[in-house]
Image (cartoon, rainbow, N blue to C red; front, side, top):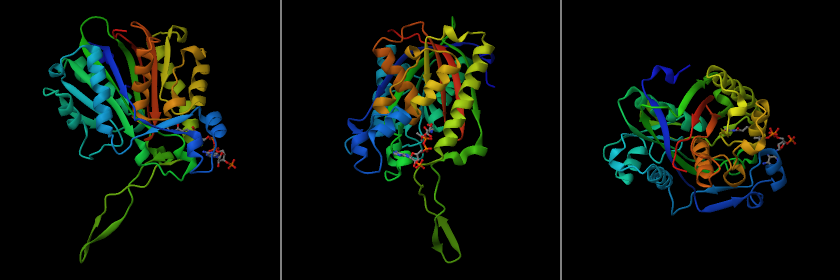
Length: 338
Ligand code: UT7
């Protein structure tokens, strides 16, 4: 377990932002392509529609927009940003998309890098950023979760294509010497179950010269054993959240908002019921965006901050989970201006 008790300084959440593509694809529209229907998708997942990046948009643009909104909310000069981490499994450039975002923002003093942990990516990136801030080596960080799973979904596989969408969200976090926003966290991986959900490379070797071959860079579409991932999520998320609540001696009735990775409404409901958290405190926007992978948590946070459901000082219990398999949880207070 990684614990922020090892760090010298606290972390404050001071801004958030998000951006989503223009194009909406409803369940009814999807049923024109695959054998599915709105009733099945809504009742099994809570998803009503999702958004898909079109030709005139890009993941980097969405991520830049989300980051800029977070920086504006935090009221930061972009030159004071030290670190930008882009959590994504779908970069535009496999060498990394975050430097482009850094230059788009004009954050010329920031170091930027990508981090991949699928749907847990935002949480993993947030905890990574918090280590730089808490150690005192950096002061201000922007953590972005952005994914374009639409380009890796098999749009003829009804078991997966109905679930995913594109989007971006971001938070601005800074090191503080007084009361911390980030109370505690834990991150986990289990690669032995990685086959339950993957976007793996094809093993396509082509002739290079006589006697030598090379592997062509290409990937298979997303493959998922839905039931296994479902069981993993409803088993592990309550355990990891429960451990953090116990560690910091926080009773679940003190949680203002349950902010989970938006994968399936039934997963959100199952986790909430394990902690007796009433549905009014369970944040969900699955209906409008589906599962946007690394983007779901900051996208949901931004929506609930801007519509003033989440207020400064609110306690948020957050958990992300997904491919890897990977999962994590964090407890934090929101300290933004709303
Ligand atoms: O970010 C983390 C990523 N993923 C997840 O968190 C996903 C976790 N898993 C799930 O959310 C659920 O397992 C699913 C929503 C993916 C599937 O729900 P399910 O209740 O586990 O359904 P199932 O896979 O057991 O399928 C039940 C039936 C099957 O038909 P038969 O074999 O019973 O005749 C499927 O073929 O539903 C059928 N089905 C569909 N029918 C209409 C599967 N997908 C669809 C569809 N439309 N889109």
